[in-house]
Length: 186
Image 1 (cartoon, rainbow, N blue to C red):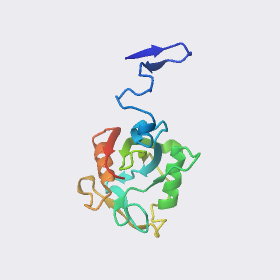
Image 2 (image 1 turned 30 degrees about the vertical axis):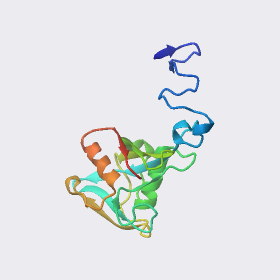
Image 3 (image 1 turned 120 degrees about the horizontal axis):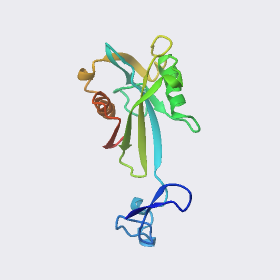
Image 4 (image 1 turned 135 degrees about the horizontal axis):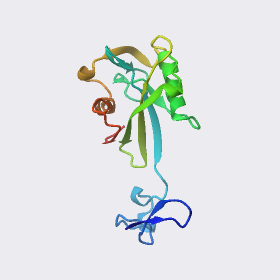
């Protein structure tokens, strides 16, 4: 049962739960130590940022190379948030590093959030997809050592060798869905 808890001066929800703090029926204690289901530590959440640069030609994808993730596959220009960095700054930094373009943080629109659950239950990814209202400079492959080529693809004819969660997210964006969850390995 949930009840509002106003005693601390904040509006919050309190859940009446057993003494072990669990509401899912799982036991806790030494016999269950080391299992994910009883971990008191929150999972590690990696935040990825993705640029959805689209126009009449389609959406811009790059073929990854010399990377630990998805080498040889097509993917949106993307990267990870660095420690202490706002997500909007992460996206503008990645756009400059990968494409040689400048984008003001205020010109970014968050168009989709994907909670990407991987094979490791202690580590999941929050993938943020941004569309720029405008940008400065000419799009170019600024990281040829990590990107074999850049190409515009029609949304209805993405290459078969596109990163699967990219295909998923672009479909969700096209349908106007702001949030989705995927349960498959990263």
